[in-house]
Length: 454
Image (cartoon, rainbow, N blue to C red):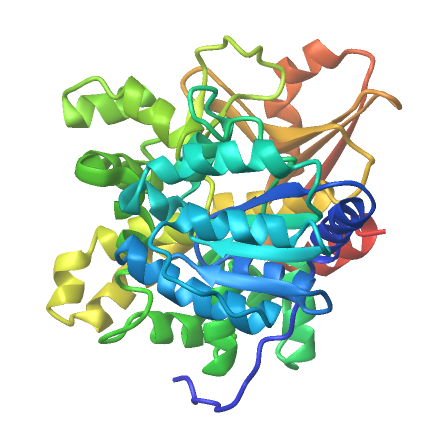
């Protein structure tokens, strides 16, 4: 069981590139004119912390767009502005864009950073805000030195606001930064600093958190690092994680969330082709799959290495490791969980986790191989009917090499002779390439990180 540890603070990890980019944009604001940056990415990924870290050594103003009347928001922001600027405002402001114009004009006198968090909430508060911001920005952009950072957690709405050509703020963002989860090497660094690193702990942290900083922080605060410690922490009454999938996605999906959840549950359970899912739902789901991929950024289409973009041999996978686990073991067993049958759910996980873990281990090794510039295309391979599956294929078109790996949780089950046999048809497409065969398991994680993270 986990032992609760108090007063544990999560260190700021691995956002150096993003900080450098934001600092570079700020210098451009100082030397030329105003800039707009959009920070987006899934919830709990650390967008707000990143923005505040960037602005910590600069004149800055942070504003959270809470779900309340516009006049009340203006009242809050006006107090913040007066404290920031030292200027007392005479009168009353009830429209957000009036305050926005004051802030942009203040930037004409001196550079500063304005952070507006959960910006997409104005879709519900007052949609006209977007066109008014466009008007004000177009008027003052080349006179002001403000760096505006718009943060949004609902990915589909933020992309629509700034990248839909029908929307007023289309083309106004100078940069859109999509904040990603921590990499496996960052998770390793965190585990080492907490004196709990083992390849197994790294793998199960990667599987259960997907590198999401908030989840890792929760486990650190409760001194949970091993598989059993983390599962015990997740699967108990009032656990933060039990409703997390719903909390993340229902607002994104809206009234059709039931259909989307059914699709994601099937993908998590291994029904990864459109035909498999449609046979269960008894309806066409092409539009839902398209939106899950392009609008919501929750799934991705996977084709075998060597297949063209129009190949009908394809699968779908959930991009986020945590969501994949949540739909497979939490959402699927929600009736058991609501009846507090946690020990029984753990028995289900104990039975099925090894099978579930295999593709996640493949994904982990593919990520690690991708740390280097040795290979271009990295993916997997299978033939029609899921025949001759190869877990990892990496192509080096410069030196004419093709890397083929069999990935197993248990190394003793790896047979390279089978891998060589399964690769024959694929190698016909790469006749001039030298094949490299390898078997990989959890115990190889360290050596591969050392090899490829240079």
